Amino acid sequence: MASKFLMLFKPFQRFTFEIKKPARKPSFKRKLAWTFGILALYLAMLNIPIVGVPREAGQGTDPFFAMRAILASQRGSLAELGIGPIVTAGLIMQLLVGSQIIKVDFTSSEERALYTGTQKVLAILMTLFEALAYILGGAYGEDLTFEAQMLILTQLIVAGLVILLMDEVIQKGYGLGSGISLFIAASVCFNIFDGMFSLTQESSGGVMWYRGAILAFFQGIGRGDVATPFSRPGRTPDLVGLLATIVVFAMVIYVDSIKVEIPVQHSQYKMPARYPIKFLYTSNIPVILVSALFANVYFISNLMHNKWSNESTGIKFFLVNFMGRWEEIPDTTQLQPVSGLAALTTAPYGPEQVGVHPGNAIAYMFFMIILCGVFSRIWIDTAGMSSKNVAKQLLDANMQIPGFRRNPKIVERYLERYIPIAAWIGGFFIGILAAVADFLGALGTGTGILLTTGILRQYYEIFASEQISETVPALAGLLGLK
Image 1 (tube, rainbow, N blue to C red):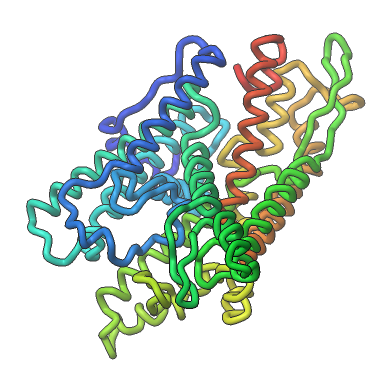
Image 2 (tube, rainbow, N blue to C red; image 1 turned 135 degrees about the vertical axis):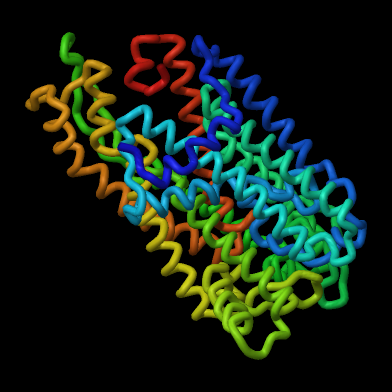
């Protein structure tokens, strides 16, 4: 029996759009075309400005400036909200399932469909909520007319629905991977490239420097100053951040290759094989969910500060202090949290900031590690990666573990020795790596680099699996590509 909470959303699901799975499995080339086509559309949305926003409003404070890469969004564009509503809806459902507030039997196709439909309704509601929060919170100026507000609201909602639709198209099998991962990777890669080669010039110590770290390095050689490009103030890219980016890339690729291989064999032909259980079993999913949680804390805190920072007593004063107060970053128009929950869930950027705010750094690492572990463990149940699901997948592919009967319960108990432990430990480690990468000031943010490395590795494996399944169709069942 499905949870009462899920049943509440069932009447609304009929009003949401649904992409049906393709009747026949698309070819690899067709999937590739869909994937690049959707990516091109998303990049176009990142560069199309919202109609009705005053020019001066786009140059003011950006409440999400530190998290744009992770949210795959762009200030003042149709992709203003990015993947935020989708990931937030997924985060809410994860928390409800993990806390046992709602119970879902993910082996039941009916309950799984109800769960997915409820998550889609929540994503639409979050799109509406975040769009209203941006407008009423003054992100586009305080003097907008009602007509201008409705125009902007309509554009944000329609754009949010288009992004949700694009993600579903890819996930239903028309494309490769997931839309969320694709958009994050594209956004972070752009930020890395911009951090290395940006031609924008910024003042440092009264001298103009290129923003791009590599260009600044050659500029420093010409000026006889090679020290400045290695360490620059604020969030300006420098060579230490570039080196940190390379180190994080290499470390994630290495750790992602660590795995436990369980011996399996075909039940009929007795052909030996290995089923790998990776150390990073849930890959970058925990970091995406934790980043979404931190981004919402960050956003709500910013809105409260903007509206109620002058309050001196009462509940509003308490909420502002609890969520965090903000101060302007020197030499910029942006604000940063300096106290409260927002400061504790925002990574100090670069070694210099870690030295200035060591307490915030410790709190951020603690929250990141614990939450990544928790979300990793919850994810294996909701995403069909649990011991029970893997046991069924192996048996459906006519595989068995040598020395054990082909019984789902027996195979499940065997896999319980590895899968839950890999989920917990892998989640903890990915949290440590994400925090350290942020502290080193990696380009595109440390968390963004971590996510992108895992995503690119996933796409490499997807490409290889798709090509193998087309060459040897009999392996498609074991690879989960049927």
